[in-house]
Image 1 (tube, rainbow, N blue to C red):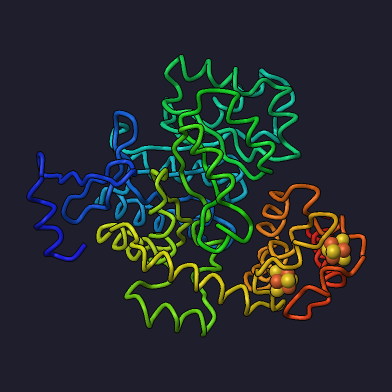
Image 2 (image 1 turned 180 degrees about the vertical axis):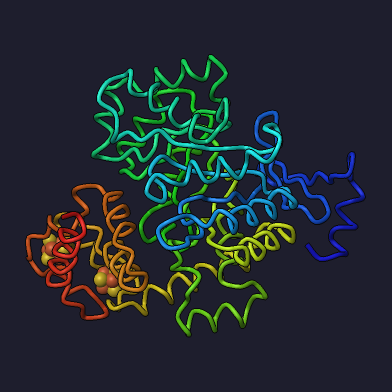
Length: 406
Ligand code: SF4
Ligand code: SF4
């Protein structure tokens, strides 16, 4: 925040903090040299949280000293939300972040962890693994706890082991303060899951590249309609929105003072229903830069929203597949295949080389929208202004997906 804005906001200060009325958003709270916070139920949450899936490494082990420095810097600046999971960093993340946080009073930090659905065989496993996680993290309770990665493959187990019922009991016992889920499935599955429980929050992938192209907004809309607050994962699309192409970077620089990371994080944090944005930081430098973004934080204005759309279009059009997402092909496809979404996914994959993210995003598409449903009728190519050989490209994408899945 610029000095002048801080003084204006401070005019409303209550006990050292300044409350800003949100236009349909949850209340934003700012104080000097601290990351902005949002009101959430009866507490406040920092708008930036440390995602613990890409922690600093020394060979095969987590660099605990660097992690401690990162955590210290976060805590000094009010970024006291930490998000880990059972399988992060080869199942070493929980132990490392727990060790680091142990140096602080329990009530001074918020720890989020996730229940690994893939490890469950019986309802008893839910509690057993939960207790293991408490031990690894060296805490007596989790502030935020999620059913991890509900998707087409895991939703069956999630129901079979009565995960919601088991976790609700742990919440009643005070071992979970807020119960939620993280999601990588289709809108159809999400519509069912949101009705399973009075969820306290949902963790979704929200970034300006996927919002329209991969229809990320559909998931966000479903959750918002149910009145469930959102915590954001992958706001920078696995690094894809940090390393912009020359053309996209030029567009950003000509129109904004933000770095690519700051621009992407602010975009995610500016959605109405978002309470925190998690960034998987790997060193102190990244922590410092991101924290500064949220000390200076203000929601995006209309001009910046438009700029994000324009940059997303540039990124899409510059990928290996020169698709402009005009969607003319979709108007004629008898199978309803989501051609521009598939091309955007593929382009991003080729930029980031992140197989896991490619597979996860691919799975968020409905079965009917996927590349293997193409019957090679060729109608789409006749309607494509870029003259793309769409059926051939879809075969290539399907092959690539099968390789990542296999
Ligand atoms: S070739 Fe495939 S993608 Fe194109 S219109 Fe036919 S079914 Fe749809
Ligand atoms: S018609 Fe061509 S450019 Fe337009 S969305 Fe379809 S594939 Fe992309």
